[in-house]
Length: 355
Image 1 (cartoon, rainbow, N blue to C red):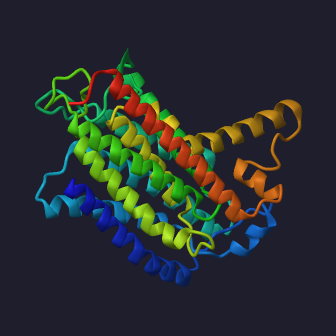
Image 2: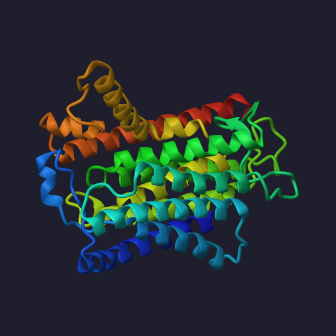
């Protein structure tokens, strides 16, 4: 447990103290946020706020992870490195998107095709590598079986799993990206989901089938290391939120939102909780569905279902104060996480009594 705490503390300190440096650096270089002209007019005052703060989130998470291993002289694991690689890879795609926006002074960066290709390359590489590196117990970082709280009998097979890995990564990273439209909204929600994965991963470590033969044990390759990754990401988000909360002094940009979404997808696959992520990340699901419905209604009925999508902008245009929207959406995110943890624990109890 101490290494989990060290990871969270180290990443918190790096993010909390490193973000002001990033703000000064990005402001000096003119790396300011561009604002959509068709969005709420209150957002126009945010034009020029430093962006690409996701670089701090990624750096703080990596520092927190390795700090925990250095302090306790623990070796890194394939699961931890793969999740961090997925996070950094998607962060690089987001960085290119942000940089193009800034360089060309437009609100659109990479083309949809270019972003799709970038996400696909990173996700496919993760999907291929995650089913390798079996340990002495025959467990690999991820499983080709579909999972909710643990693996189901349904086996995708190696090729179909790579496709599933891409769907997971694309859906989660884009979900966080769509949620990142108000000061601190995506950061706060991500903090809660990463926190839930600290609990889930550590619980699976304590009830691993390697040390327990009970019917409620879990077959996960590196649950403790995933708890460390989750704690590092949570700490990074906490520190960044200090500067990203309303009124935001820096935005994470696509660099951060794609990276955080990728990390969540990787953690879900390596903890065998792929479908549970839909519950834990309920806010991201709601935001994504609102965009899908908006597009479907407009194309099919030639009318808008919401004032604007994603749905947080709908409430802004309906007259809600930005801070009111943020806090209420944080409540939704917290309820989703609480419900997901409840489902996780109920499933554990259904397999047998506590040890």
